[in-house]
Structures are given as structure tokens and as C-alpha cells.
Length: 476
Image (cartoon, rainbow, N blue to C red; front, side, top):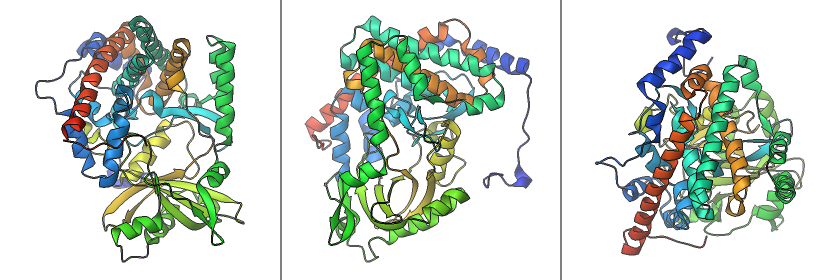
């Protein structure tokens, strides 16, 4: 039983028939036509996009905020990756089907990738859940679709080609949701996409050269584990293994503590974090973690949208100095969705992230857990933890040809549908989507219009830096 739901207050669960659930979807379609999702116009009182970024910066590491802006300024696509709050505010003003699921909240195409399951199978899934929350499933679809339109512009694809890519991804989402609607509950829960399925998809439309490149990417992913990170990120210092400094991207814990003039032992925060985090793991994983000893940590810059939030690399050693475990502890702040769909039922945002990830992913990292600690600056913060690298890999969007991007859009659409089907009413959602391409066309229209808006917002950031309103650090 969930600790957030005491027995005395447990809600009664309604079990509708298949026909009732399908009727619910059709009724929602009558209230909010599928064509209505194709419209996008900024509201008259639309928030200043730069102002929203400044608002987020207030809770981030001040010296890293210019790096975030610098990364977002590279292109409209990198801007979009960091603009989850801006889009959430915009989506809040768009039509809603009224059907909810656990959603990612930041489902752009770069937040999908491959990683190892606990059974050591390479799987494809969503890999970023910082913003996860129950909400309108179509918000994830719109964010994913717009990301392909924006990436297609970045690659120089013609408008008709971009529309084909976006529509293919949405059509795949719709087809997979219908497949889930006709499946038994346990089959939906056990569904997953492994690398073998990805290669079968590639056989239908990719060239031999493109398939070979995909196999190379997968082979590289299998090398991205704790041992690879250990050899790349650490070195022997005075007989002890330490994480190597590479400021501002990687800063050892002792240097961070010195900057804060902390009177507390500099690694006390991390030791407290690990000690209490263990209790959020399953019993067998807790036993495994206790075989490792914490030896060092460093602050690390991650991603685009997450730059400036606190993130740590934790180095632990097992049976000897060649038995490493590298964990990442990442700060979890309030989801960008909460002001628009309501507060999370979890008071700890690390737990919110972990709960959402476990619900949406087919298989999650064995060391996925959460905790709340007092920081070196005296502030209380929430974190979630997982392995730093465990056979992780991602698609090379920057060089992806149009036919491969179409296949990738289908893969992401299928993955998103599988994730939503686990928690949302898959029968009602499928009924709402319908059998024809009306929803696909509407979302393709939305993606084009919102990509235009994204370019305007990107230019607003560039202008803010040029005017001196914001400071940006580029090249890192």
C-alpha cells in the first residue's frame, strides 16, 4: 500500500466496462474535437518566455545559469530542450481532452534512448522524468511532435518532409494505443521495446549504411557503464581514487565546500544522502548497495534544461579498487507542470520523479531511489539517484537523414503510447484518437505553428543576452 494513501482514506476504484470506457473517449471527442488540437495562437496575456527562464534561474546554482543560457542559444532546437516551463505554460491554454495519464512533461525526441534493463537486455524507452506528473496525455504528444518539427528545421528538411515525420510519429502513437486498448492488463504492463525490435523497424525503411550506424551506436552504448565512466572520470591521487576536476562541468566536493565556506564536513551531505537513500530501495538492492563504500563525489553539469540544478557524481568502491559503482544524485525541484495541473501528491520531489519513472518505464535502474538532505549552503533539497551510466545511448539527431528520422519518430511515438497506456485509460484514449488520421493531422498543424513560436522565443533569449539582460557562457 502506498504510504501516501493510508488505509482509512483509500479511494474507491471504479471498474468500468470496455464499452463504458470507449464511450468515455467518444464523449470527450464530442466535447473537445480532435481538430481543436491543431490550433496554436499565443494568449494575449502570454508570459514573457525570458521572464520564465529567469524565474527558474532563481533556484539554481548562480554561476551555472549563464552556461544554461549559452547551451540554449546554440539553436532553436537546443532552446526548445530547455524550454519545458515555457511550453507547459502555453499548453495550459490549449484544449484538453479531459483524459489523464502519468506523463513525462518533457517528452522531446532527445529524452528517449537505450539503456540496460536489470536483466541486462538493451531497451529503448523514455529516459528523463524530471517533470513527470499525472496530466493530459496530449501534452506529451504535442511536445514530442513539435520537437521533430524543430529538429527537422535544424536539419534543413523541406516542410512536406517535416510534416511526414511528425505525422508518422503521431500515427504510430495512435496505432499502439489501439493495440494496447485491445490487450489484457498484464500484457500492457509487460510490454517493452528492446533493441531487436528497433532493428526490425530499421529493416523496413533504413539503408544498409544507416542500419550499420545504428548497430555501432548500440555497441557503444554497451560500453557506457560504470567501468567506462570510472576510467574516464577518475584517477589515482595520493593512493586514493578521486573524481578528476574539469570545471565548471565537474567540480570535486572539496572545492564546492571551499566555495561555500562550509563549517560542516564537506562530504557529510553526501554520506547522509547515501545512508538515507538506501531505505528507498527494494531490500535486495539495498543489500547490494551496502557492499559498496562511498569514497568521493563531485558536482556535475547535466543536460540543457537541467543546467544549474544541483547534480552530483558519487563514487563508491566494492571488493577492491577495480570494482566501482558510480551513482548520479540529481536535484528534483517542483515539476513545471504543477502550477497548471495541480500539486504532486508526493511532498518529496525526488519521490515524485522515481514514482513517475517506475510507472512509465518498462524497466527502471536497480539503484533508482530518492532522498532529502541539507545542502552545503544550509538549504533543504530533494534528490533522486540512479546509476550514472548503464549501457546508455542516444540517437544522433544532428546527422540523422529524413527517412531515419521518420523511423525514429515512429519509435518514440510507440514508446510514448506504451508508457501512457500503463496509467491512463488506454481504451478511452484510443476511442478519443479514433481510427482515421484526424488527430495526426491536427498535431502536425500544431507542431508547425508551435515551432514558429519557438523560433520567436529563441530570438527573445538571444536579444536578452545581447542587451545585457542575461549573461550567457558558450562553448561548454
